[in-house]
Length: 419
Image (cartoon, rainbow, N blue to C red; front, side, top):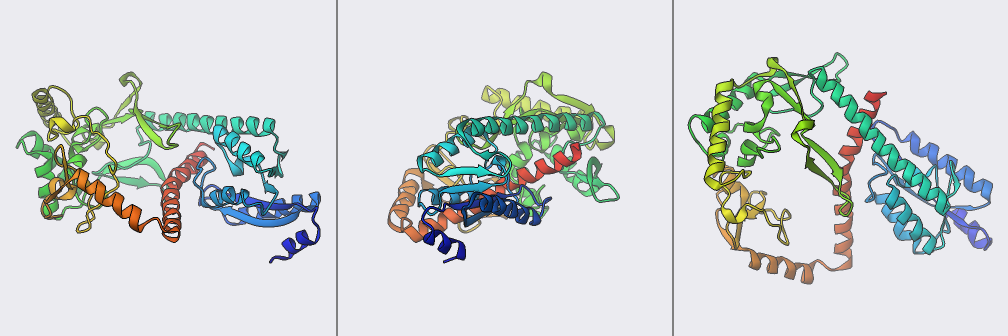
């Protein structure tokens, strides 16, 4: 037992105060944690409380609810081991307005007070007001970032990301200011894909299989798939839909907003009138005639199916892409590839069908209902042990936070650029 907690036992009237500290990105440092702890301990000492457990989250945004330290704090609130939560400011605990207000209601139910060094006691009014201010701050930051990226596009620079076929032209200090140049080797692969699809009438599936068979790395260093080549024509994704290859930089095609229920960012297509197109002839890889031939074939294939589908190989029963119980959650043990719908009732290995036999030769299928029953039975009989479930929660939280942290880091970098 710690010295402070022993002191609390000897003095029944002394409140035990938990400390929560956080910083947002790897551009900050661990010293920020120490500074916050010091401020919180000074506040606890002034109030005559006793220092209790300390909860820490490093390099993660306050808009992300599934922070490991924050979640442990929420869980321990119900245990009665402390009566006060102390933080440097409310935005260390939560930046989302709605989540902040809900967070305060849970603490009041458990009769746990919230005090911060910046705002003092966190009343309903303070939490509601501060939560709204923090939410407005995030919206304002997003708007300013959008405006800054717009300026980049007007200057003929990239607003972020790197398309296959190009290299980053970094500054002397190693910074990416949006300048790009053509990667000669990758540009040849791009022309080959356009030739194969537009002139030789090969399907995206056959093109991907041939590239994988020859050992040519995909855009992310992995294997090619038909979706990498064909993508979505409306959204401008996929090799054959990227207008940068004909010397036109397109920006603001999509916007990203957080889903209110799932708390996950999802993309929405902006009206075409809001798109910004900027000529960048020095980045052209494909000539206009070949581009027109590819677009003509896409239109022809859409006409055969009676509409604009995302892939010319989709059968009618997959056009609406229904979600099933295990959609997006399964992997084949032999190759690590995803499991996808093969027919109206069966599933199979995505890699074997979309990337060719050089990646996976397993073309066996399984009835979807049998697969779902097998997985659910395994969950009931093998994975409901408390220690196994706890390990799952830890692993899931770590993976989720790692995926979300990338967005927070990018946001911090954009904030620095705006300054």
